[in-house]
Length: 355
Length: 107
Ligand SMILES: [Zn+2]
Image (tube, rainbow over all chains, first blue to last red; front, side, top):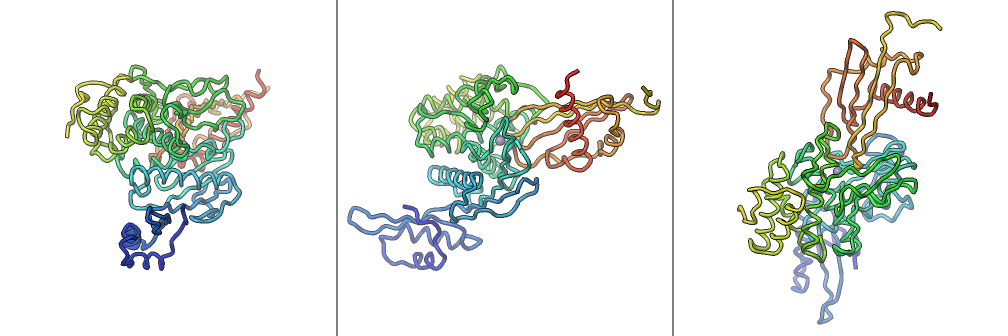
């Protein structure tokens, strides 16, 4: 059971406890008190162990602030809901709040990463940005969500994968720093799609087979012929509509799109690494966030160049898989096969660890 | 039907919006002839075509490519969404509204 925010005086008390039964809580409390600013946020959980002892555990918690731009294109807007506050009744505000919580939970509980920067960075978001604004973005400091035009797009907080996608851009900014153009830009996009999909799967407790692997499901209005904006499982099949045309994502490196638009097609060519991830996850089965997701997460911390191309990133994922699971592991095999399945191969991927 | 004065510059303007979370490309076009009550030369000349626009920060922001052709003049610029303010915004909103009118009343 989660009891929300722990006041600083209680933290100080927990940090001083002499009872060994509270060792984990004591450690967590000390860590929270050492943070600067002194106290941000934590989750306190109570349970009973086999001997009927009360066990308190303190874990990292999110520090969310959702602001409302009130249809202006001015940031940050007025604060609508802060950490620990009750739902406001405004769907955009509450979806952003819950979505950031679900994304924080994936990174914290599965990958032991405390927020975007790994050090409890506050999660700031703005909703109701602009008038009929058809977009969601990360501006380097906060996540921003438009309401959509109501004809093609509904509100952008309506899909958890979109919220996870935006927060993951922050994680990439603090780790791999992939430049937002060409192949490195498509990788940056793909990483956000991967973790956006994983947030949804983790939150719904869906296995590889149960998951939709869609990004932005439910964003389109009923007028549009399409289920979502992108599919990691089958890039190029998410929508096919009279007005919007067909999902332009390639699923194979042979079909890489050269274009001046969209920083070199970063939202188009991301289909290639997206499918490589899907293939690796499918080969491993079970929950995608556990092994495939762990490998992709580990890859972000490797010394990648900002301009890394698909081949360099692929080699890094193999290195990450080897380091965690061993060179001869089925995980390495699945990752190599995933990249081979989208035509990203070469001397750099041979199944051997390079570290 | 009065001929436009000879010194009047005629423009053809194309606005392309790409990127954004959805990565969908949209295009709007307008010509001076579509609406000669508009001061197209004034709109075009008000824009700082030669100023370098900063790259978009972060990710998923729209990218705007604007080109104005009025022989012998040819101007192009690529802007991030936060830079689409002042005269740029004025020009883009005008092109979008003329484009929409043209589509609403097909010749
Ligand atoms: Zn993105």
